[in-house]
Image 1 (tube, one colour):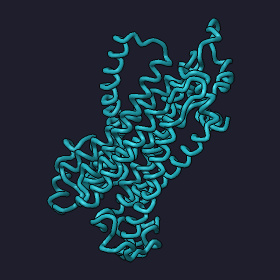
Image 2 (image 1 turned 180 degrees about the vertical axis):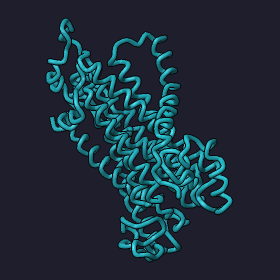
Image 3 (image 1 turned 90 degrees about the horizontal axis):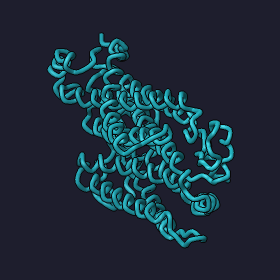
Image 4 (image 1 turned 90 degrees about the vertical axis):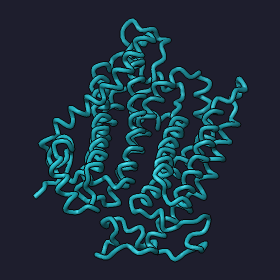
Length: 411
């Protein structure tokens, strides 16, 4: 009998992920040396940006894995039938596919699932390396606190556990939804790290003004609303509830179709089940779909209003509009999400539209966190003790610690 958790190939999979991570790191290192990049803080920022970029790629490829029904392409974890790759598991995969041709196992699905795991392992290897280097270089002037990288390491370990549960619990919707939300959390966490490394270059007047700006509070509200909408969107996708409504703005020819919210949002149940041994009904699936639509009616104008506020926000001392670009980003992403969401409904959930919708959600998290992470200048004094002997007191030192953004937001 196949063991769902088989750690025999774990070391080989981890080493393969580390080798994959070395490829983009080598390119970045080569370009950094050519551009004269010096000092650990500069390299720390570049490597964190690379990790963020790969995490965004991983979010989209995870959606591709789910949407191609490849989540159980290898029915054990972390390898494939106890092997490092589908090459070595060729016979087992063919036997499973022959026994159930319409089932979840095939050569193509096994490769999609394993490539997803390799990419996840590569991101994990990068985050582990960043954590080790951050602790080693923790006394360097301008370096980010190693606790940031440590929190990221804990996050990636949690995501690995969710990946294992996704397989062992047979794509249970609450687990798959949690896995996607965890991925978005990682995007936000890495964005904050990049941003904290950048903000030391911002003028003090700009940071102080932003810390006091009322528009920032609106940003946190929009981010909270986005988190709810992403959770609902993940619930729609993991329950395959997109196609229960095939037209807009009505659903099933009605403005308010028959819906069963109690069944639709019964969280602890298997895929396709109602939690009581029967199949989930059309009314339950419709409730899931319509809940996502109803919050979208709030989400879209919230993004447009917040984007407009950012575009019009002016620095009193210079008359500049420092967040004009961010406002335009939010407007563009709002239009992107509207177009991709509509295409999923009226075009029958095309793969490209679904992937675009997931990417748009991740980019919204990235941009909102980018805007909201802007600490006030007085926090700089907290790290004075970290400056090495002989370092000029004028050297800007970025904030430290995973909770610094929160303390600064209240400043």
